[in-house]
Length: 161
Image (cartoon, helix red, strand yellow):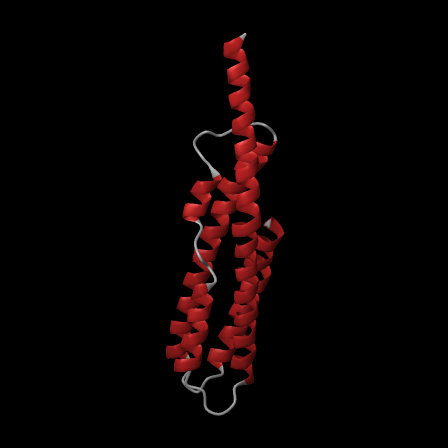
């Protein structure tokens, strides 16, 4: 999952940004649309970065500590689930904005390229979120429950003897 985070932040999203910038600069309307589209994309990138930073700085160290037997009673994986946001839907919104409001004259191969990249990235992010929601979270919950059960049995044994 960390590799996926790095892929999105250091490769995929910057690559899309460059293509988007080229596509809007090639437009006959240039600067006005360029500013709007790039601002939207840059704000989205910051949102993704915050999302990923939370996972890298809070969630993953928690899981690493949990696996090594160092419990953190202040955080549970359910906290992550409550904080976990849908970061792929904003890409769909950008696609719709580009399709509806991009003032292209004729065929724009650059814009088509950007739209295909946005679609692929959106699908990749959806898959990444499904892995987190349907595999990672339940697995960590199972580990938490097992640790709680073992801890409860140990407390029980200590009070009986």
